[in-house]
Amino acid sequence: MYQGEDILKEFDDEVTIPDSVDMGVRFVNFIIDWLLSMVYLFATAFCLGIVLGLTVPNFSYWIIENRGLFKFLSYVFAYTVWPLYYVLQEGLLKGRTIGKLITGTVAIRLDGQPLSWGNVFGRSYARIVPFEMFSGFGTPWHDSWTATTVVKKADLVTM
View 1 (tube, rainbow, N blue to C red):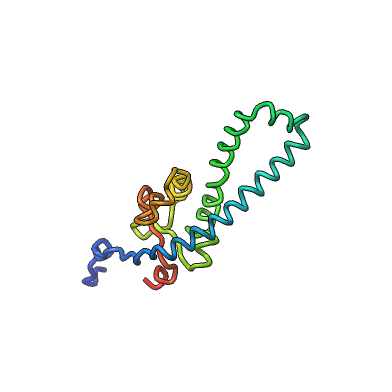
View 2: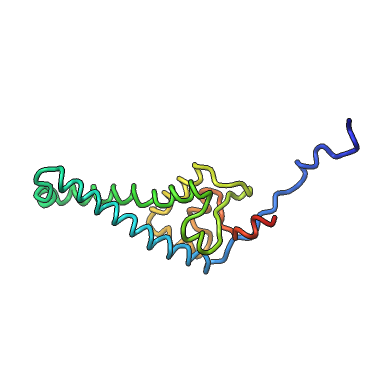
């Protein structure tokens, strides 16, 4: 029975989002994740090179004869595989990467909800846009284009 409670109260409450972390923390996240993503990219490329070298006859000669095509395929490989570092981590770790784990931060949507897979893919592939890293002096494009932000995990839990 109705006890005089305001049944619409939950709709009236505003979601309180913690403040975004400062540029210094974002920069530390960037450096850690960039270094680890380069290790991931080079390790993946190395393994692919070994497999192709062992399974494709005369692969090294093909590279020499088709330098332009090989360079193009290298870019396609890099711009496909490199963002997967972020996709896998932010998707499976609920908005966190190794850099964010170290700094105690997490990426969330601006409405306070956890990232969706669409947000994760958008954030990850926005990072391959030329000069995107320089957008970090304000709101990074991978945040503004996906309506996300990075906050301290401790602030999010206590709210």
